Image (cartoon, rainbow, N blue to C red; front, side, top):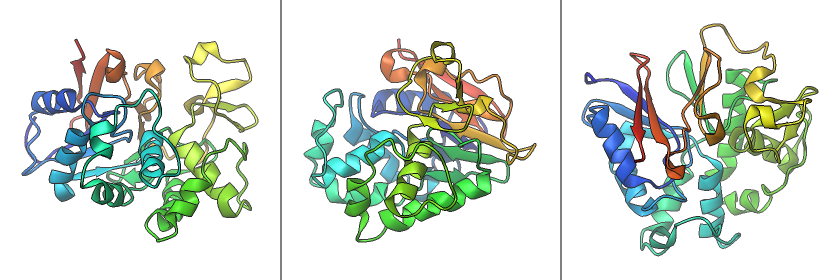
Length: 272
């Protein structure tokens, strides 16, 4: 790829070797290119610490949104939760730079506007929101994450309720819905309730549940594109020109995927 381009990578999950190989394949030049990520920077891959060290070394050439695994790591760092049994975080949690890593993660929001037409979010755009509202709601969560009270938010984010959005929601119920929609959402019911239990392919869910991108969104403008990760079972397939899925399950033995904003080129790196 030519220099001066913006490359967006799907869920890295601590797969450091795969990330570096994919960036080499994209001819990523940190001196002139920009790297963005759709979240889940850490967790189940072979080296989350090396992944974080590399991304931190890029400075302002790198930006990301937070995924559910990243938020959980923050809770683990604070002693609020234990690591997930399937995660591979031992070297990261044993790092003398752990506090710095936590502070770095908390600088990222739940949504990110890459340019005029491209918005990143880990799980997706809740179909009753436009991208401007998504970014504003992300800012509400970031106000907590970047304050001294952030452990209080982490304590209160682990629940599936409320299921339905209401602009009048307040307090931790409001913040929890925003976090769940941005980092955990896959299926939404036809009456716009989050279902956080179904995790398979679209055809595996009950009839009243639809992938979030298959419900009408009147607030999404014609030229806008939403770029997301999180849902490996989709293998990147949405059949929507305005919705680009980048989680193609590298950590499960499939592919890691990158998208170049300027050219629209999608690059895949097979795990094997």
